[in-house]
Image 1 (cartoon, rainbow, N blue to C red):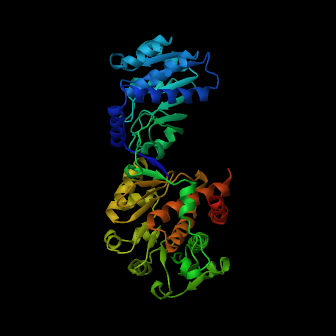
Image 2: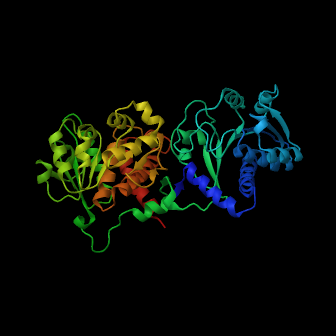
Image 3: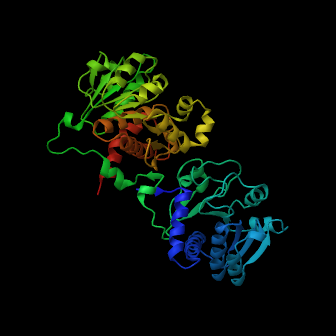
Length: 478
């Protein structure tokens, strides 16, 4: 599991190390890792022009010491100081001893030094920074040449380390070298987009998984959680998922939700709704029922909402069931906050940003700019697990770390893709995964299936569903 930690927890870890190690050890470890990554990116260090944008904190010190290491290897290193009076004294001395040059941000040569650099190192603001770049810093960042490599120190300046929010100008890095632990803002959009490729340098903080604020499944985690039948399994032991979806206007939503569910690991899929003929025509193995959900037969989890229209009656019956329920699409619009909170069985909500905004009573732009805070607030308000779909899919419960999905492709932004995800995650619920794991594993597989199906070209939702078995095998492969 990849874990990420907030500023306060990282600071506490740094203080613990500094209490038992000689002064300056952490900064030297960070600088060594930063210099090594810069050298790797450059390939040839000798004779390369490097410009450091240096702020007043330890972040600037990391950049200066790393610059000194590059200068000793023959790079032409210049530091542009945003606040000369408060620049890290030890780092400045080290850079000067190594032959590097130093100018203030207001020096007429500053922008030219940035413009002519092959590598620009962003050491302006550290993980404690808030808000966008100041005007002079933004101008210097903008001066970087189109071919220049931009490396951010710990977190791109202007990106909120704890949330990934960006308020104003910020550095867009090709690579971010982060120290000790991943930060939430590097894994959640919009911050993730600004961070580029993230490289982690271990500086010995020793942070525990229990303290993580954010976590992301890796292959091994998904493989461990996937339900696999044993010798004694039958369709009921594997779980039966019920699908309440579709309408006269949107029969395809039912077909796609069933498609995802059939490939999600449950033993059987029951469909209840007006699109039974369309479902059976495509998937004859589906158990269909024309009656209400309460009369459909044994079900271990329900999926309700895709293409449902205004059928609040069917939704109400599903919410009254004492089994896990996944609510999506029209179901989110119809379900009341109190109705969801009063359920005793687990509930998984799967909104996209627009639906989340409607549930929270805010503008869509507010959700997209603050995805982490939005998913946490939805989980708190509804007393449910929430899977917030989007450029970075997040899964949050009332307690515990938020999970961020590391898989996916922009081609998944296509009609019906969310219906497939709902069926897939609902099937995992029926197979016995809790809501947090079902949402996380469902999003992980869905993202991999999207990549597999698209392969760099447009993809339809049905293609994503059909790719799920292939990525399931890929994840399970030893």
